[in-house]
Image 1 (cartoon, helix red, strand yellow):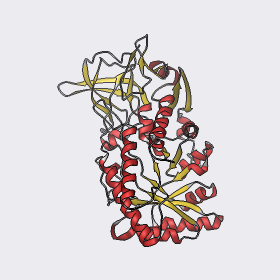
Image 2: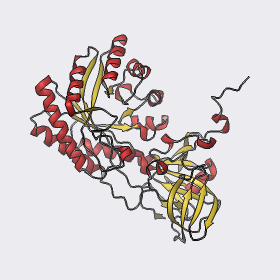
Image 3: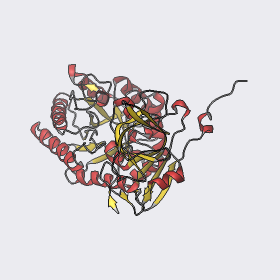
Amino acid sequence: MSIIIPPLPRSTRVNAGGHLEVGGCDVAGLAGEFGTPLFIYDEQEIRSRCREYRRAFESRAEGARIIYASKAFACLALFQLMAEEGLSLDVASGGELFTALSAWFPPEEIFLHGNANTRDELHQAVRNEVGHVVLDSLDELGVLDEVAAQAGRIQPVLLRVTPGIEAHTHDYIQTGKQDSKFGFTLSEDAALAAVKAAMAAAHLELMGLHCHIGSQIFSMEPYRKTAAVIADFMAQCREQLGFECRLLDMGGGLGIAYTADDQPPSVADYAEAVTSAVAAETRRAGLELPRIAVEPGRSIVANAGLTAYEIETIKSIPGVRKYAAVNGGMSDNLRPALYGAAYTALIASRPEAAPTETVTIAGKHCESGDILVKDAPLPDPAPGDILVTPATGAYGYSMASNYNGQPRPAVVFVRDGNARVVIRRETYEDLIRLNERSQ
């Protein structure tokens, strides 16, 4: 058997039948058994990435905390896996929190995030004694203090600071620049005032600071700049307010390979950049080194996942383009339409065959922008072929919709030649389950 290179999972092989195999399972066979579109995750790949993160950070920073950013992909089975691997969990809504608690995830290891948490969501977090709430505004701070008082609880919190650092990534996924909906800016002492307010709140315990500069980042320099800015702010907080930061969450954002041209830093490179920068900058500022946390999401699950579709039609426009339309699209992978994100494609039954033509992979939805892969080199694609797009493990299912009445796909975990359904395929009945008929 031969090996297929990334961005597919590291277990990927071409088996004796010439088919693509992931986690010991024939991908075309999985499509036949579970239907398409189908999200396929290599469970061992996810576990390996979790362990890689823990080794890289814990060997460089005592007590380092790895917090999985569940917005990348969330389900009961995945949250149970994260608990088994010793990771904490970042949730960004009441729904993600409910899913985590339903998976019996330890509440003390949960961080609730968000720039518009409702009173009910904050009440849900306090009632279930989540480990930390990451405060994003003064309004939220006041409401959380009231909710915690009603519950008779002192709620640990972090304060999200916007460092004013622009990561070199798409505008939609830059979160650390000054003009951002997230966090407290350093300008005009807004963040300093928030620290003061959090320290004064009777039912909140300010444990530390949080910052996040964006996603799909390849350069380590923005993290170093962020560490310098945050260290200066920590020193200001100590000098003016007497606040000592015990936990510093540096966010996530490490990029991954979506195509063979992408060359992201390794987890070890990322860990070295973050931990060495925080250590150096806090030492420069004369501060005690806080416990370091990071929030990887995409870089844990993206390359562990792939999507299998069936090609339904082939359409040639002479002198213009050839389209292969599949039975999914923007309802299961919104990123190409939303960000212009690039993906690759291959045929599951002949992954090593030499390309014979350039084909654009179109989705089935009633939008001209529903293009999954533009100009993909493929070996004579035909209706009935199982087409695979790698690196769809993050922000695929989690951003999925029922646009055009499309049921969301099933999700399977594969490992050691076995496959298990972790999210069942929606049915047409599921689409109208919440509808009310007129009398």
